Length: 368
Ligand code: GN1
Ligand code: MG
Image 1 (cartoon, protein in one colour):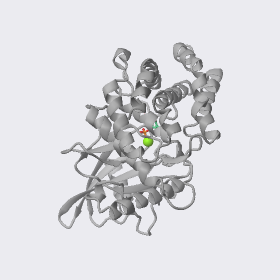
Image 2: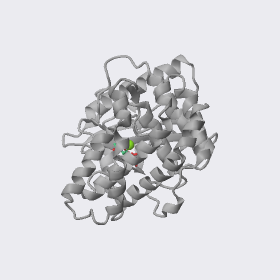
Image 3: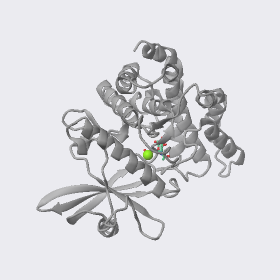
Image 4: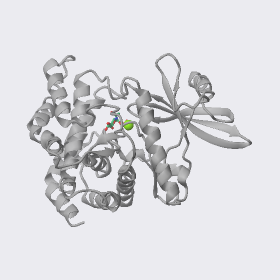
């Protein structure tokens, strides 16, 4: 901890922050990046900033990540300003440049750091507490997509190529099973069988996109519920975070990951699988919230796959956890042995629950 604080003092001096660092601490333990909050004294006032180290193993080109991020957040901020929205500095991330005007600091030794304004008076949750929260998440991510419909300039860079390419995710699992480098396939036999039995679903959206039936859009691509900041007092969604994977994609992938993370009362790694279920009241509010904003641009073809997308993305993340388990846990940070297998089991249980309700889910959306 002391070492981190010292290291952070050095990092913090690289950015355009006018103040004395008082203390710093780990802020969020995600699966990928390292995030710290730091408190500064600025003219006698305590002000907080976020310092984050970008995971270079996952994001091969941090400068490209930051280029996208600055374009996207600037565009959103311009829109909010044009709308004369209130509370603008809490509604979209603000990147603090380095002293020489860059969006990130490179320490010369493989580490890339960036700094954001700390959004005060908000909370994030690992699991949804109420249908209202699901509505807010849907509305916020839908609005995020809506804001980016008219982003000017060249196509955004693909920060992780084929991120939601479900065929390639499936192939990666097949390869990991074949190699079985860590001798773990036996332990995961039922999950592997489940995955293989669901192969037909992996091409549905890819085919629709290849045919041009579904358009490419600018999407968030990591729409976990804990990436929405909710106002502590009003419960309103203020800001969506974790913008590293904002890139060209499919609107449905975003909605699918919201279904995965907002409709079950459980955490992503719940071991009591009897508790894992897609709850219809949550789904209804989520879909209403999403369509209240994204409904302004979504096509009929996109709407027709809304329920399916929830099943597909839950399946895809399950595949990724399983692949990582079989490959020795090198991608997702784990906190206990077998953690990725537990996460996979939770995802696949949720897939089964969605399968049982998919028709009713889609029927509800068709009426909105
Ligand atoms: C990772 O950044 P974090 O931990 O929220 C992952 C997502 C997965 C998620 C599963 C860049 O997200 O794709 O859905 O874990 N992010 C990346 O919890 O791979
Ligand atoms: Mg993320």
